[in-house]
Every structure is written in C-alpha cells, then in structure tokens.
Image 1 (tube, rainbow over the protein chains, first blue to last red):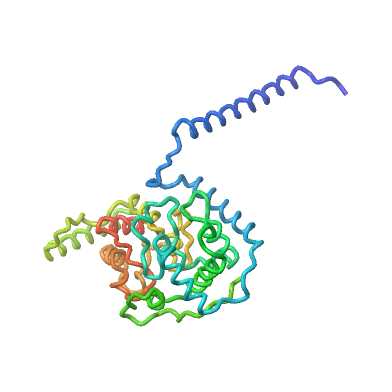
Image 2: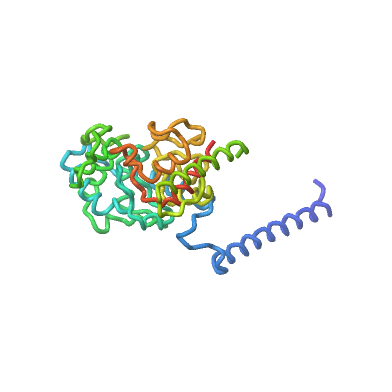
Length: 197
Length: 125
C-alpha cells in the first residue's frame, strides 16, 4: 500500500472546505430566517408550496402513526351521531363548515385554512379522527379538544364525522335545528355508520 | 391562453356588462373575468380544495365535490348551467340558488371575488 499522495490530500482538503462552506451557508440562511425576519409569519399570505407540503405531509404521517394506539368502538349509535351533530354545530362548524354551510368569514383568515370535512371520514379512519380532535394539530388553529371535552363527547363528534360524507344538506339543517332547504334532498338519509378501516 | 379564446371571453364580458348596465345594476362591473392569480389565492383561502380536486393547488385533493380538472373545457357547471363565464360567476356567487339543496355552500363571494375565481378556473385546461 503506497502512502496517500499530494493529490489525495488536496482533494480531501477541497471536500472538507466545501462541506464547511455548505454548513456555513445553511447556518447563515437559518440565522437570516429565524433572526433576520426573512420568514413571513403573516397568516394573510399563503405558505410557500414547499412549507405547505412539508408541514401537511408531516402532519398526516404523525397522525397515522400515533392513532394506532386508539381503539374505536365497534359501532356508533344514532344517539351518538345526534349528540355529535350538536357538538359539531357549536364547536366545529365555524371553522370547518358543513353541507351547504359556509365557514365563518374569518376562517378564511387562517393559514393553513381549515378544511371542510365532508370527506374527512374518507381520508381518515375513526381512530385517526379521534386522535386529531383529541390532540389538535400544532401550527394550525386546531385545538386539542381533549383538554376541554370528555372522551365520550369526542367519540360522538367522530360518530357524526363518519356520517357526514352521506349527510344531505337538508338532514344537516334539520340536525342543527334550522330550516331545511326547499328542494328534495338528493343525498341519502343519515344512518349511524360503523367505523371504517 | 390562445387569442380567439381571449377574444371570446372579452366578448362575453362585454355582453354581461351591457346586460347588467341595462338592468341598472349599482355595482360597478369590470368587463369580463377578473384576475386569475387573485382567484387562485381566493380558491386557496376559501378551502375549495378540501371538497374539490384542483390540479396545481396546495392540498386540493377533496373528495366531496367533483374534481375541477380541465374545468375550462367542461361543458356544464354543476350539471346544470352551460359553462360560460357569466354562468360561472353566477354559480360561484349563488350555488344554492342554481341548485337548491346541493352540498356547496354559498361562500358569500363578492362580484369581484367571483370574477377572480372564475378567471382562475378558466386557466384549468
């Protein structure tokens, strides 16, 4: 084995210098973002696409992995769905809207904007929905409702969310105790749904 | 956008402006569609993508309403209205009047906001 030559050490030094410069540049960018005011903290402007993607995908995987510990009831009763509808109307609808019900005007001022949940039960399992309502989501405006509400109450909300994809605007209006729309309901009537997945 | 399309849109806008003027509308109506970039921002802010799949919009993968892929080329709005710019603005402003009892809420968009969103939807080809 011959000793490392001059060329080797030159290459090595260049690699080290490159690594140090890259780390310094990354550090400078981080300092600029954190202390230099480069990050736009305003909720009135959208996230950069990369930030929106990274935070959203991180949230999805965090919820999926953490909700594995949650055990859902075998089925929900009509009483649970009805109680969940009342709770949803009071606590959730302002930010998340409902079938033919717009969110409060100020919900559009939140970034990330709170989604309508008509398809939530198609995206999330019952344990995942429970976990999200119970624990909330960091860096969104979603509170940890488990701080204020009982486990039973949160399962009632999940029971309602499970029905929501099939709930007609008319049924929803009746559940809320408001006037039903004039036209016949095009969607199926509500039934308590078993937890999916 | 190709020139004939733009001309057609301008035509529609002029027609609409003329008809609104004939009705004696107080609201100053900009001719034609609005600003597609502003419309894209409004679509994001109003969470359109939580019910509709919209290509190119952040997290717009909703499963409750129809996908808006290729919206500009679609023949009908809500299976009801011919897909023309003024019909689109009408639908965006009053979905519950056009199809009573459907699941899309009245988002209380102003005329300008609806025009901006319509301009954005017209970019989905």
